[in-house]
Length: 257
Image 1 (tube, one colour):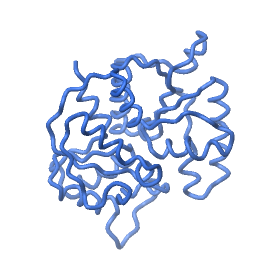
Image 2: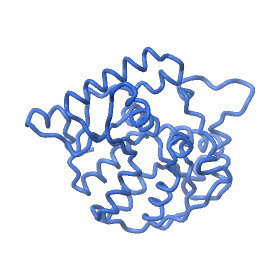
Image 3: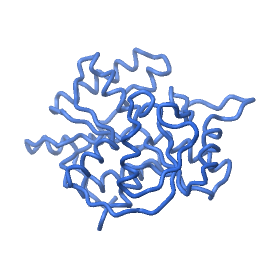
Image 4: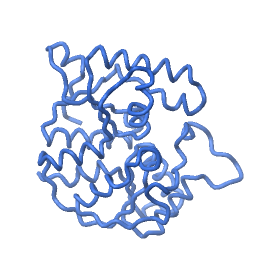
């Protein structure tokens, strides 16, 4: 990135705490394309002068894929390790790019004693705009929005990504299935880690077809895993016909120099 990103441990060594813990997540850590979303969010945080830090090598999985795949023991082990780590650093506020991580921290960690103020990056970016901490220029582009299941359907975050698109000046063309009635990209429930079943069209391809039929220049999502699946669908059906980007990347493009 060419940017020095502090870790929570480095700040703790100086007797300091971050304003937020930026939880990078599995996809943005290990997938080259999804990593660009994390880089875009860092640019946004720096533009807003947010004092943030990451866990670096101390970051582990939330345990969400294990629980969705049915391994409750592994989930609880991962969750308890994370909770112990967060509490040791006095972490109070967590911001994440991933709706799966968001849902797990917000709705499932409290059952195990992990109580934190949890934000999805879309919510947090809107907060920064409303506080006047970001200056935005308008982008002129036609987009369609794929609502991630764990953001819209499960956590009622439907209006927030649309407000963010409007703040950037983008024109939205909705797919027939959108908002709380959105159609899954096929990655949830740990499905992204298994092979596709033979004899039926992959879910991600069906969803990508719906997005392409809107005629939008860019397919936008708000989840690194959704972006991976939608990218694969566009590649299979009509490579080059539309870009696939995370909404955080578009906001980064819309920052005033």
